[in-house]
Image (cartoon, rainbow, N blue to C red; front, top):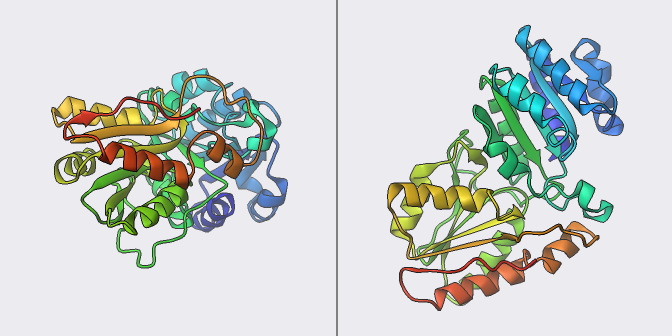
Length: 319
């Protein structure tokens, strides 16, 4: 996703000299070509994320569209006040790019586990929050954010889902993409963990269980119509996220249903429970440990399908 983002940003920067990229002193191998081609559109702010955000906001208020870039936790947690009070409050065209969403940097420990970012940022007013699941969505999201006024967060993952054989669902900011048809359940997910959801649904299909899959790449503003349609038309909703269950995608989906008074036949969230992800390992390993891999998703789906109609299953994602 990182490389796909830079490739598309390079295309955009060639057409629009107002587009800028600021790094928090990393990504040199990835960003070198961009820096060489656009020396007036690139800055290294150093390991100083608060200053990076303030600098980006100032440039944005001067007419630039500025992308800040660092490992997911770094450009949002330390400079959160700057994102809220300076960028969001003033509607500045600051696009915060967090690479390494979820357990992408799992081997580096909890300081690099980006597992609360969606919840934190979706709580801020006047911000767009995007977590693409594949390279196509990554590139289209990059272009879309350039043309969308205001502050945004783009969460990029190390893992990516295989592209759809026939990309019939175009990327539209704020509108979910339907990846698979089915009526037994609807899986709602975002980010690279889509690859696990796809594998799980293929497994379930061997037993005749057909599930709809929605790529909810835009967590905020979320696609209410797609969620309510899933609640009305299928046997229940299961959300899957490589993120804490507190305030993330699953919470956003539940809020849509409750606010509309539409109760799915079944509802379940798969994600991380409260507590730090203190275990260290690869992204694949941690997904297995925390019950987020395809096998775990299959098990949860079978379990909730065994429950009766209107059974809201308690949250018990492993962790």
